[in-house]
Length: 211
Image 1 (cartoon, rainbow, N blue to C red):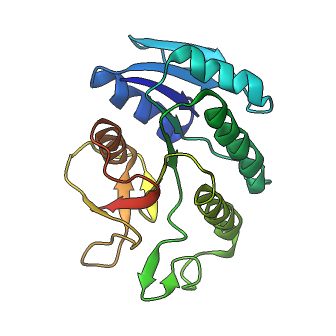
Image 2 (cartoon, helix red, strand yellow):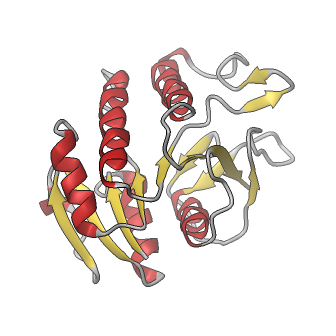
Image 3 (cartoon, rainbow, N blue to C red):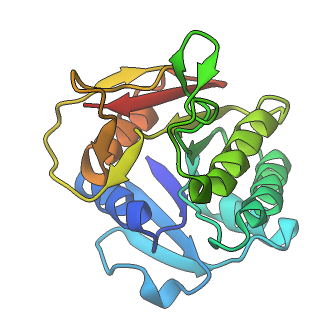
């Protein structure tokens, strides 16, 4: 497959990029600073900050992409900066007809009990709430985007770790282990993300992962 990856220099983006390449896919890795993209086979790079919809549409069209993956993360002091650039990415995809957008999301909107989201459960530290609220707004915006989208929410703790290939998936409910801990490594998340690209099962919906 030909994949356009935004956020390829970020923590999860670097791991997703490697998983894509290791599984034989061709990637156009796009970043604000493309010189920081890992040098891997079958990867080309381009610069884009998602402020110019026409430029973004041209990059995606030029890649003849089967899908676009966004692993973009906002600055911590202005998490809502993610929303206009995500809207521009959606607009660019509409312009060039790229088949699909897969978003690396957040866990805050997942349910931990009937009708109770992680965000509203009281479990989260106050300093986490801005990024949580941004991702909930992003997820809700996708529902009316008019494109083929998938929002892939990680577990509550999303961090470097091992590539085990052993994990569980759900749609709207937080995946936690027997101790109540919700965790996934970047490496196993990347496996499930590329699985979804190769064999799509979640068109126009959210899904999630955990151990």
